[in-house]
Each structure stands twice: as C-alpha cells, then as structure tokens.
Length: 328
Ligand code: F6P
Image: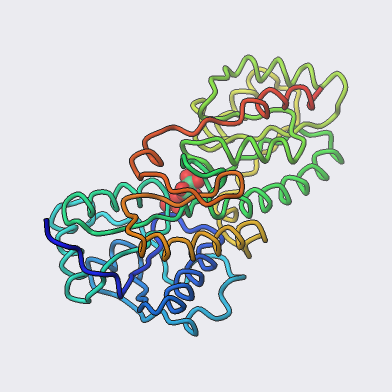
C-alpha cells in the first residue's frame, strides 16, 4: 500500500447554510495551522470553489478581526455541480494542482455527505466541523451557531410577548429547522411558550387547539413556537387551521426566517469553534479523516461522518415533557 504524503498544506472551506461562529472556526484553523508550521488556503464558496479553483491564502493575519463576525468570510454555497461525479473529479484535480494535502470542511449534513464522497472516490483526507444552526448532527452536544441562533430567536420572541400581552393576542412564531426541532424546542422552553410544533413529533391540530383553549382559561395571551418543517405546515398554515376552529381568537404570525442565521456569535459558539478549529488541524496531522469533530460533555470527540449524518440525534425528551408542565 502506498504511503500517503505528509500533510504540509491544508485547505479549509465553509459550506451549506452559514452559521454564526464559522469565522471563529476559520480563524482557529488558520492560526493552528500556522502554529504547526503548515500552509493554509481558504476555498471560496464551499464545494463550488473547489471545482472552480477559487482560493485565498489564509495566514494568521488574514483571519484577524473576524472572531466576532457572523456569516463566513469565505462565503458559502450549496453546490449542484458537486453532486455529480465529474464535479467531484474536478475538485480532486484542483487539490492535486494546488498541492493541498487535506481539508477541513465546516458545515452540516449536506457538506459531510459531499466530503464522504470525495474521500471514497478520490481518497481526500477531510475532517468536518459541525457548522449549522440546526444542531441536527450526532456526535456533538451542540453545533457551531446553534447557541447564537436560539439566543437571537428568543430575544425576538421576548419582544413579541410584550406586544402579545398588551393586546391579549395569540402569536404563532416560526423558527428555522427544516427537518429538525432543536431550535424550536430550545426557543419554546427559553421563551416560556405555551406550545411548540416540531417535525419530529406528531401533534394533530386538535391537540394544539385543546391546549390553547385550556391556556385561555388562565392566560390572556399565548405564544406558539412552530419549527418551519412541522408536518402540519409552517406558522402561517397552522395559524389558518387554528383560526377555523377558534375564530374568536385575535391571532398574529411572525416568521423569524434568516435573521436567526446572522449576528455576532455568542461566547459559547466562539469558544467551541476555536477549540474544534484548532483540534481539526491536530487530528489531521495525527492521521484522522472521514470524520467530524464535535464537543461532547465539554470534550472534543471524533465521530465518523457516516455516524454524524446517519444516526438521528434525538430531541431531549425531558425538555419535551417539561414544556406542558411549565405552560400550565
Ligand atoms: O440548515 C440551516 C438552515 O438555516 C435551516 O434551518 C433552514 O431550513 C435552511 O438552512 C434554509 O436554507 P436557505 O438559506 O438555503 O434558504
């Protein structure tokens, strides 16, 4: 079996939906690489940049003054071209041309699916960092950006509660999470919502209507948090269905949307991104690849990509059970 070349040059990119803390992770990768005597190159716009050979040198000074910034300085994309074998072959050729020995990919399940294919088809050594607000990856207690996103959403819901209480209104607030309810559940608990609708949990509209009618006996206003991927529909669709059954209620709908993805990362996200970013360089040097680095009980943990994206992370059952207790 041929010996793999030693790692002297690493590439790093962000891919999929951006998340607050991606910049902090890029900074840590670039600085740790410099500290270990490696060259570091940033790849622009995720897999598209690999295919189209769009790069920037990422030395320690290039990542100054970004730890506090939301978004990603390298930009991000969901690449259609990379879904094809030809696209992935172009990406592998680009890495060979540029002498890039290994990659750090910062993103979510789509990013790691692509990273796996690049490893399987071309042997590219890649370590992933969990960069998504959705918190839907196994092998990490939280993903980079989740804490900032839920703090942003809760701040907004607190404001909606002020106006809901002033007008005795029922508010439906839609938060992100196409396939996963981690954002919805955390927001519902932290904002003291009366009810939450989540993609993972089957909740017929009748149950929601019963809970709201019940709440009305002791409260004049209510907040229902809806994860965008709920099977009954988003907040607008659900509010319409509830209105048909409770026409006397004064209702409003707010869709928080992409504002949850922006903003300066919280301390939790910055620290996790810094720790994992630096650890990714060390793990590559130690021979790890085809795996994601996460944080479990405060410790850095390596989880194969197949498991990080293939094993469903369950919602915390105790928090699910807690919501109706606290909404009493
Ligand atoms: O995966 C992160 C996420 O923000 C999801 O919560 C959301 O459903 C999706 O991205 C939105 O994607 P886009 O920015 O492409 O509309």
